[in-house]
Length: 176
Length: 343
Image 1 (tube, rainbow over the protein chains, first blue to last red):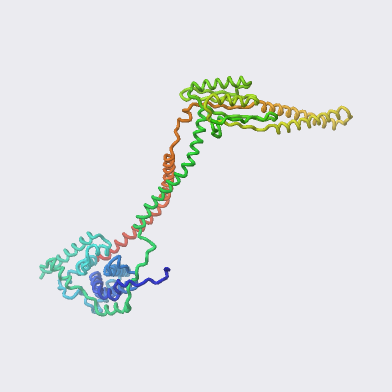
Image 2 (cartoon, rainbow over the protein chains, first blue to last red):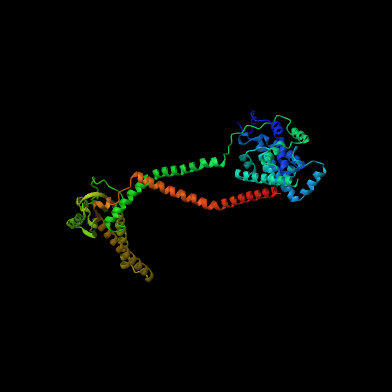
C-alpha cells in the first residue's frame, strides 16, 4: 500500500450530518453562554461547524468524543473572535449592531427574568463553565481538558460561578 | 429564595436551542455521508512512547557496545599487558630504564645453538635473562658470570647488582667470538632461562670493502710517490700531487683504523645478562579476561558518558531557550484567554 492510496472510511464512526444535527444545540448554547449575544453565538456556531466539517475526515474517535472535539473548536473560534474584537475595539459596536437587528439575547426559553439578569452579571469564563458543566452536562475531566485547566480548577470556577449566581438571585428576591 | 438545585434545574431545563436558520445552514454544510477516515498506521509516535522506548534502547545500546568493545579490546590489552610486564620485569632486573631488554620471549627449553661462522667477520651480540631463586642467588650468579667471562678470555663492560627483597643484576660482558657459544651455555646455566636473543650481523662485506679501498689508496700513494721522485715537475703540479698524497695518507690512516675496529668488533661478542628473581615477574599478577573486559567496558562507558554530557552541554542552552519560549507563549496565551473571558 502506498501513502497516496485513499484511506477507507470508518464505517463505525458517525457521519458529520448526524453529529451536527445532534450537537448543534450544545455548541450553540455553549457559545451563547460565552458571548451572551444571540447573533454572535449564531455566527460563531456556523463558523465552528464550517471548521469542523473541513477537519472531520481527520477526526479520531479514539481520542475523544465528537462533542468534546466540537466544543474545543467552538472555544478556539470564540477566543479568536474575542481577540480580534478586542484588537479592533469594536465589540460594543457589534453588540449594538446585533441589538439593532432585533434579536432577543435570551439564554434560553423558560428562563426567569432574574436568572437571565443574574447570568449576565457573570464573566464569560464563569458562564462558560456553567454552560459546560450544568447546561451541557460535561464531566469535570472533559471540561478540564477542553478549558486547558485542572479538574479542581473547573470545580472551583463552577462553585464560584454558582455562588455568584445564587447571590444575585438572592438580591433579586430581596428587592422583590 | 432560589436554592442551588432549583437553579441548576432551571439552567438545564432552559437549554438554548439553535435557531432554525442556523440549523439549515449547518445542514447545507454536509449533504453527503461524510465520515472520518480510518486512522493510518502512524509513522510518528507520541513523544512519551518514543521516550519510553528510546531511552532504554539507547542505554542498552551504550552498555552493549561497551561490553562488546570491552571484550574485543581485552584481547589487545592482554598482549599489551604481557609486553608491559616483560618490559617492567626487564627494567626492574636491570635496575635502570633504557637497559636492553629482550624483545621476544624465547622458549627457555631451547638453547641457542646459533654461533658465528668461522671464516667470516661477524658481530655477535646476545641478550639473556635468567631467573634465580632469591636475592642471594642473584649475587652468586653475578659473580659466577664475571668468573666465567674471565675464564673465557673476556672482560666486563658494565655490571650492576641490586640486592634486597627482589634482587636483580645486569651485566654486560665481551668474550671472544670463538667462545660465545660456551659463554651463552655457561651463563644460561646460572638459572632458569626466561628469555634469550642472539643477534649476528655480518661484517665481512664491510671489511672487504675497507680492504679493497685500502689497496686502491696504497696503489695511488705509490704512483704519486714515483712521479714525485722520477719526474721534474713544475711547482704547481708538484704542489697538487703533494696535497693529493697528504689526503690519501689521511684516508689510509682512517681505513686502517676502520679495518682494525671492524676486526676487533668481529673478534669479541657482546653479551648482556640480566638476572632476576621470581618476584620481579610475579609481582603484578596479570588481570583475568573478565577483569580486563570489565575495565575496558567501563572505560568505553565513561567515554560515552563524556560524549553524551558534551552533547547535552552544547544543546542545553538551545533547548532551554526553546522551552522557555514555548512556555512563555503558552502562559501568555492562557493569560490572554483568561483576561478575555473575565469580561
